[in-house]
Length: 137
Image 1 (cartoon, helix red, strand yellow):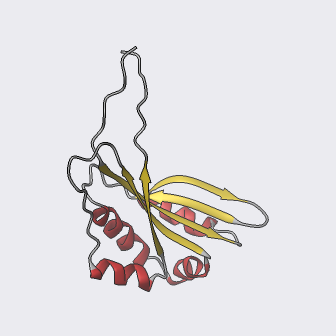
Image 2: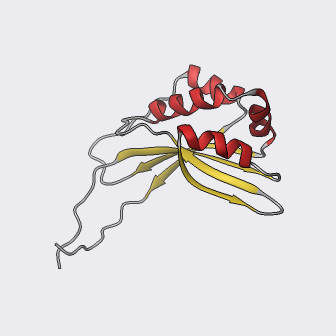
Image 3: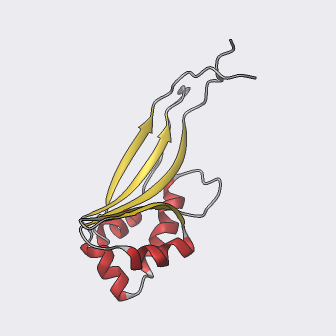
């Protein structure tokens, strides 16, 4: 049995996650045109969705967050209000921890942090564990 190759630590992506106790469908319909819709759920009690930018091979969370902020900030007033009334709005930054050879840095500028704050959103940093998995060649 051959063991899986060891991956280096790296930035993966940013998911933007939203939850509300009302229907988010109008917001989802617009956002899925300019982003990748990861999932959407709606029930009588709540609604939620996750999106990510359509950028490919980004090297830092700042690139993806900037793209998502551009899309969110240009929403029409009524859709901005739906987003604003949502109780959860999170930029979920993902990293794969791999095997670190040196520190992994991902700077978020004060300009981006102010823009995130203006939308009343939170930031979560998710570090996925390194798991040695066997694979078949």
